[in-house]
Length: 333
Image (tube, rainbow, N blue to C red):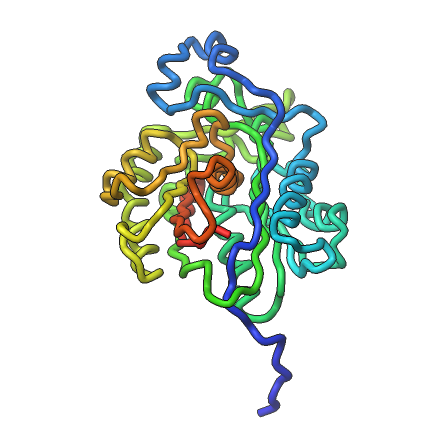
């Protein structure tokens, strides 16, 4: 059998830098309640959201991605030309072809890296972290950029009582590269396609485009069903990720779940029996649910606010449409 040449030697992988970009329009609950016959009190009780960030027309998926990636590169001390891979996790880049990742890479000044999009909804960023870490370990990349980015307002029906107050816009990015010891634990990921319709686009594009009056491309969600699934099923996934990383809940410093709903976050924390010493990300209160951008934005805020410091162990867990999920323990850079 012919022996093939080996690629570059692999290395343990870690997150080296974090960046973020938030939609510049701050939208309080009061701005949305009339259209959905609701109240600020009801929204906060149901979701924990006080306000959210919406993008302006100029704040495109590409612009927000580039801004977040550049901050992550600066934090890591890495130049764009050193990046071998750019992975963009998004469901709201509305040009289906081509992917937005190559355009992001070019604008950043990367030197023809592999660049592709990942469509795993709210779990997309954690999927991208896993792919990038595996590339570094295997030697097919030295440095990789992973960005979760959404302009969900393009898919949002502001008269839908079940979704209008939930979703928002922004981007969060990390640089992943070689390190002396592993800073990204084994992933626990999967999907439950039997319930793919819990969160979905209301109509597929063929139906939308064939209608006399195109419309209906909005996100729809079975909120109660999603709450039950995430609150109870995802705690088991989080505990398994801790076990695979070789640590227990008492070793954990930070819990950074997908910012879907404050009640879901609280239910997971109780089910996992997290000690009071574990800091819990609650970015949703002022950002809203940004799907693939949710986890990196929440992580970025924890670092910026001093709730997560270099060397801390953080459990990342994301879940959403598909129903797709992923969880891993990471070391804060």
